[in-house]
Image 1 (cartoon, rainbow, N blue to C red):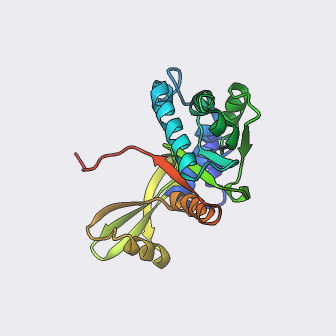
Image 2 (spheres, one colour):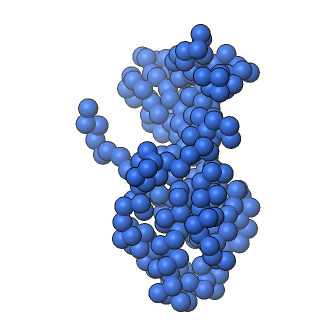
Image 3 (cartoon, rainbow, N blue to C red):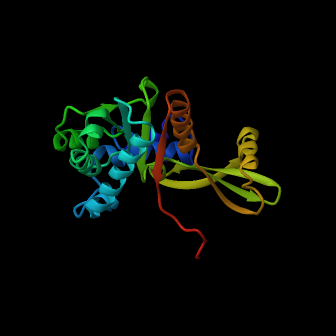
Length: 241
């Protein structure tokens, strides 16, 4: 609780997305900064941890995309949130079956967690791979961005609509207990929700501010340098509860 209390030391309350940013990625208490959550000994598994087939299929897609771009001699492939490195390891192995593509594709891993980065660097030993901390610093193209369960690991904002009023969810700490509170939403955030047609009905609204921020950078890079992107996430087409 002492570590959590530090999140609130400069404010009586913080928005949900800022709180999630802290508990997920803060260098002292962040979930992804302190442990490896993947695999049997972790908290969950993702597709690359289950079967090589998933990674091999995506690898073939990368080769096909490279061919569709007229086989450039140099192309940057950027994996967003590479986890424990399973996908990258199988990508390297699969690309060796396509020598021309293998020689052309430069692999970059974009990872926020220092803990996971250390695990990746220990497992992935290849001169073709380098780590980046800022997508903005990618200056050459074409580029291919790939994210498997990347977007759903980013913090979200949460709002509640009650008739005509819209409130944002915040968290406060009182007597070592975290409480949810709602504050009147800023006009600029209400405008964003309206743009995405999210305020038709009363109830809870989730808005991926951090995700849109990352996607905006990705889109600008693709527009400037040429290339494409593939994101894989999971969810329900219909609300089942």
